[in-house]
Length: 309
Image (cartoon, rainbow, N blue to C red; front, side, top):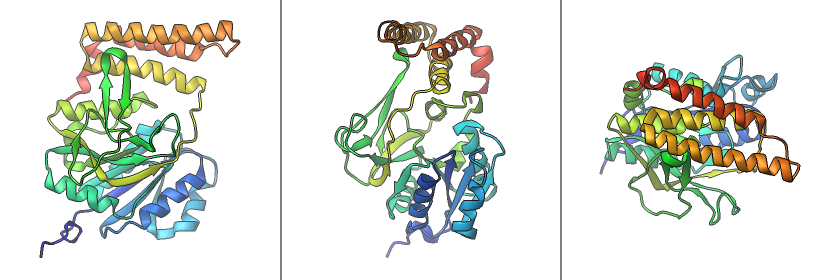
């Protein structure tokens, strides 16, 4: 009889980045603790959230969960990196970075480990991610793979339900649930913290691919993503526009960057039109973000590409 992989010492560390929404984090952690995989540690990174959240998590979960306090909001990538550093210090084989508004099926970790062990060329895998039916998940599937369109400075998810236990290759892995091979991470590097919010998953995915690692989705490994609706704020708009152009300039050619810039200008123009004619808030933060991205893109590879493998 074959030996199950969780009996040969493969440690998995699941990392939940917590910033607000304590109830979501609790549900996520509970689902992780219910997973049927022996060598599994759960880390919650309290990313400068509300006072007392770390204490509440410790009071509920005790020694079953490691809580790391960042002391300030380091952004998603910065918070995740604290957990990744802890996982690497424990000699983990795999690290699973999760949004706090996800819940996982009990067999999910075992399925992801089995897929990784059977396909050693993969650097990052994702489970298939379901969500309540709506505009962002028209068939109840939020992510079954994705692609990056650098020339348009955008990403697209596949909403088509997939089947099977073997990985299906994808263009990028969403940061919602990145199951990372730590040996690949040691070569490629962790999340690029200056991005702070947005596009950090694309950046890491493309660095993995450039270093020769494959990216994939395991359809039979399932988690659920609790979509709360699109919350638009000046901070989010700033980083979205800024980082889109930074990532395109990092991985794309000059013509690709020029095409992406035209698309971003078009989007921003539509935002301004809505502000002027429909009395919507003026997209000043998005404008600042795009202008900052342009400055960084003009500086070019000397500023951006030196961090690539």
